[in-house]
Image (cartoon, rainbow, N blue to C red; front, side, top):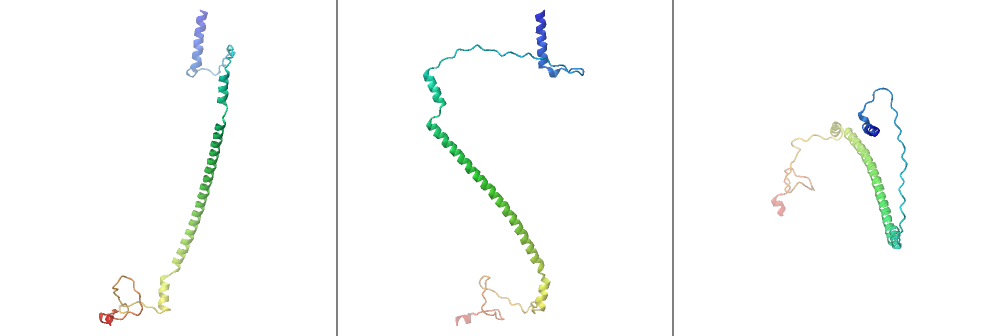
Length: 181
């Protein structure tokens, strides 16, 4: 009976440990946690030390040591890695400095564009066509062209003309008879 009681107690304790989140405790007093007895470390029986042969010990030592060729290879690999890192850092610093230079040049371009637009607008605003017309007519004696003042000229070749003398009133520069003389 006592052994049966212990077994059921053990099962209940295991169930309580696993399923604590399922149970709701009524009341306002918190239960004290049960102290778990400390386990003594289990001692394993000492195994006799096996002696290894000399050849096995030699092979182990050789495997643990680094040969001269392998040391040279590792050194060369380390030097290459350091050189690659230095090259990468140099390239990275160049990229950063160039991007800063581009930003500076873009700011400069924006300032110059703004100054250019301001100067252009000031020049456009300073020219008053009505003032130019009045000055040309009053001070310089210019007049609008009338129908009799305009002479039309038909160019036989293209649109480029070099004028060496005045165009005659008739508008004909040369006739077939004057060219053959």
